Structure formats: C-alpha cells, structure tokens
Length: 77
Image (tube, rainbow, N blue to C red; front, side):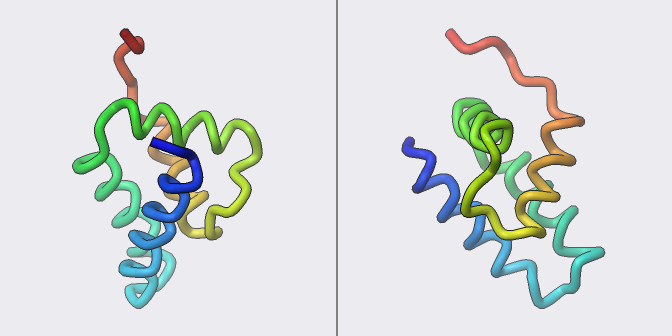
C-alpha cells in the first residue's frame, strides 16, 4: 500500500477521534491502528514517520510515534 494512502487513512482515523479532544484522540488513534492495521501497514507508516512523517496531522503523528515505541513487529518475510 502506498504511503500516500496510509497517510490518508491515518488522518481519516484522526478526524474521527478529533472531537474527543487530544487526551482521548491520541490513544484512540493508536489503539485503532494497533487493532486494525496489519503488520505491513504498520511497518510502512512507521517508516514514513522515520522519514519525517510529512502529511500526518499532529495528533496522528503523536499516536503513531507512541504506537511505534510500544509495538514489536515481526520481521518482514
């Protein structure tokens, strides 16, 4: 999946949670991505974050950063 598509999807998740305020939105975004994105998608968005994270909304960037720190991913095949 292309980084642009993942950025779009992550930002859409962020928009959904934005009405809950920062303190609930960030963990909500992280939990959603943790539960519903497969490891390849997570690896790709983490790589995008490592490359600067262009296009990610602030709450989304924060959620992905926290998720990256707590999510061990299996090695890619």
